[in-house]
Length: 529
Image 1 (tube, helix red, strand yellow):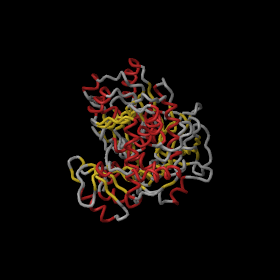
Image 2 (cartoon, rainbow, N blue to C red):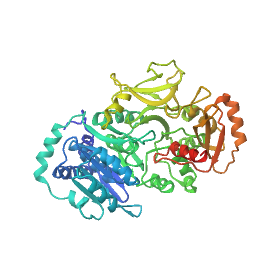
Image 3 (tube, one colour):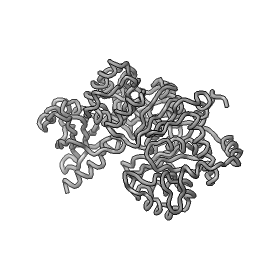
Image 4 (cartoon, rainbow, N blue to C red):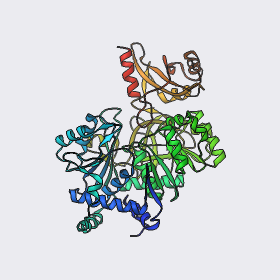
């Protein structure tokens, strides 16, 4: 195979197995796999999928946390022409029922137990309800109606090698490769379909911008149903020929130990993860000398975080980056530059890079003048194919010219840097004026006693809606309501000033590390009943 025109995700496993067969590719707990091992595991799993009867276009579901089998099953599914779906074992039965019922996987690879809980009862229920699941393979002790994953996969299947070669010859860059469900903050989660082409073309840019290479070692502790795990870290290391070092979940202390032990070069996290690490006594003792870049996205970073990371970078030469992306965009589509000034690192999301296109539009999808707030629209090879089984929802956000309308609101400066003001669904009207929560949150987060702020609109009989500000305190400091009110009055027009401040030591977070505003809205509803 020529390594110049690779257009399938699994091609890169083949490439590095040929070029650097003994180099480390995957690390999970005490299991270290070379690229030769990775290819061997991928091929064994692919042959097993063929024996089960997985067809081109089928779905393969994986219910577990980040571990080596995550990427071997993902690449194996892609090699036989199937679409891979990650499921979070923290999901309830109803959440699993919805996503499995919607995606209809022909195979389910799963843990037997999670956090001390036996999943066999939940799995048995799913098997009874969904007969389209042809086989359940268990990583752990098998039970009635299932088989052990390793025992099944490691059976000899030489007779299927010709079929595998035929299947790979039929593959196309436009084939569906990955299914990820949105968080469902505005309704039922939607299944986002990404192709080999969209994944590869997005990560081609990331590898270029971050200067990833075949010695890169990335820490991966995100849930495997998240674009950060599936694409931005997991596939990025595959394309670059580096190594994914996986943890079953984010642990502040254990992740610090892993950075030093495994000589991690890329630490990509959401801001709250960095902040939780910084709160640990072990943070000061951690050896960061191997780290080449720190990356965050998902929310803005407070000044404290940037100051601490900049101190490390001054000693080690590491770089800081942030950017903007989404599940539908297959990862990041904007980037800051190295040695960006503090204001832009704190407040902007960087700017687009070739070949990605951006415009900011009004409610009629006409471009707005530079500096005006509007909806971000993106176009390029990284845009998703469709929402699974939801043609109307797809048509509502993807136009005939290939533009994806994100529902994210932002403005741009004269240099093309983007500044987020929130989601369309988060914007609210107060006394007839548009209120953009992110603008208020940034003012509040400039206070030294505030780590994070979350502003939501609350019904009001006089003004229609007013802002309530939830504040996560900076440990060891005291921010008062009077101080925050005075700060807002100084920096914001009167109609933007929150009418209520709720100071907390913690705020509810999503698995991605973002503040869970839906949970806050439910809390407010109970408070005003």
